[in-house]
Length: 347
Image (cartoon, rainbow, N blue to C red):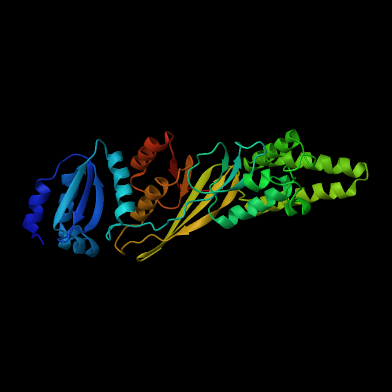
C-alpha cells in the first residue's frame, strides 16, 4: 500500500484534462470511479484529509494505484463514469441496484390484424409503443381495460393463423375474433386499433363521446344488450381514468423524482406520467455511505437512470442538484433533445 508521498507522486503525474479516474487497491480491485473536468485538480482534493469524510478517508488509505482515461469533454467523462459504475460496481460509489427494464404496451403494425401485448427490451418492431409503465401491475391493469373496451387480439401469430373458430376470449367479449372472417372486417378492426392508440395517447373525451352516441343509438332501436355493452365500455374507461387521475393539468410527459433520506438509507420514488396519464411509480434504494450528500445521491441516480431509460423532456425533483447543466448536456448528447429538471414551487 502506498504512503501519502507515493500517492502525491501518482497524482502529480496525472493529466490536467477531463476524464475519469479509477482508484485501485493493492489487489488491483477497483475501489471507486470518478469523473472530473481537470483530473489532477480533482485528485488533489483527496490529499486534504481535513475536508474528507471518514468513508473517503478509509478509501484513500486503501489506494495503491490510480488509472485514468482522458475524454474530450466533461460530459463524455460523466457518461463514461456512469457506464463504468454500472459495470464494475465499485464499493465506494453510490450504486443503483435495478436489473428490471420497464414494460410497455405494444401494438404491432407489422401484422394485418395488429396484436396488443406487453413488451420489454429493445423497440425493434414496427408499431406503437406506449409507456414506460413503472410496474407490471400498472400495465396489466391498463391492458385488461383496453381488451375489455377495444377487443383487440392478444394471441400470437401461430395461434391466430391456425384457428377455425374464435377462442374463449371472443365468447367473454375480450376479443373481436379477427381470426375468423365473419366476426369483424379489417376496416372495422383497424378502426378499433386507432381508437385504442388514441386513448393511450391521452385523447379520452372524444372516444367516450363516440361510445355514448353508439349507446344511445342502440337504445333507440331497442337493442338493449348492445347498448349495455357500450355502457360497460364507458364505465371501464371512466374507471381507468379515475385510477390514473393526477389532478395536475400541466403534466403531460413528465417524470416526478422524489428522494427521502435518513443516514445511510435512501428511498427514491419515480412517478411516470405520459399523455396526461399516471402510469405508476417505482421505488429504488441506492447503496451509499452516511457521509454522502443527498444531492450527490440524487445526481447519481438521475445519471444512472437516464443513461438506461430515455427521459421525458420534463423531470420534477424535490431537492436541488449541483450539476444540472452538465447532466442536461450529457443526456442531450445521447437523445438529441433537452431534458429540464425543476423543483415545483406552488400549484
